[in-house]
Length: 236
Length: 196
Image (cartoon, rainbow over all chains, first blue to last red; front, side, top):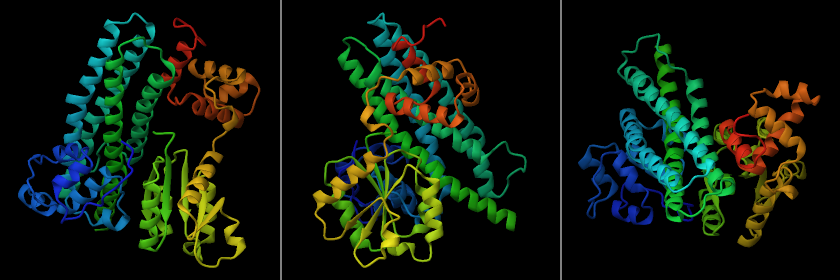
């Protein structure tokens, strides 16, 4: 998980090579609806075949490699809908795959343990989970449609959306996830169930990794792009 | 996020130098995360409010930007600043940094300076055990009771500033930041009872 080597993704890089270096990019491909059977194809070829904007691929993919784009790169991104698709797909991944997996680990731990502490963890996670689901639904139902309208220039003026509230919510989600990790690593005593705990923690780290990228795409890439468009519209 | 990781923002106009330094750091097996920028103008948008952020900066970028620099420095008091020096700079400029490295220095040296400087910012680093002081425990209990910083300050007859600094220490020591997380911490450490 800790990046000790980084490859800057460019159009001529072979996709299979990238995945061999950093398998987290599999998830990245999935979020873009790209199949894993990539043969010897380069980034450019894979993008063309999948009708994917190569600049978006490069900027988002490089985030998985720990490389953050500069302002010029961010503002050169044209296909904002593709970024939104990516974010929607990652919501599905959290909601349908990661969170149920975590809930399952917690219930296994509960079954084999009478400790009250696990009940507390379960409660903490359920509250957290509900908060996250609510936030994702808010994005899927209000934020993203608002962005889409803005892109199509068909927005209605009284949207519920507020950039400030939006930003604050994110940091809260990341804080609680980090708390959960630290509770398990430093404070909560759970006897036995070694394997389940390892899987549980592993899943939390995977989630944190993807969620961190997800938030930085929203906050550092999507929002500035949207703010730009808002500005253009109010000037026009 | 990850408290142990040192977040490095590298502001260096030369691509070669920037890449070279990043490469050395990433190869070192320490947990660095690095972002590279070529200009100071991005700085304000990229500093994360995380602990353990070190900005490595080529002082030539500060030309005519001294005021901006001071302003950013004041906005992020826990960030540490390191000058990357390979030409002559006035001591007045270099004094504004917490530490400096030169381009001829060994990798080992650079890394040990980075680690030293990043640990510098930890509050109470001598007292890193997860046990809270009596005062911190009091504050934790009040927090869980739902009191605001101001109310805690009034109750304990201390300044709000002191409350905030205690809260910071609580988070540093426990690794827990959110109120629900702290509540679980307090229950498992028997600081509060489940039914209270």
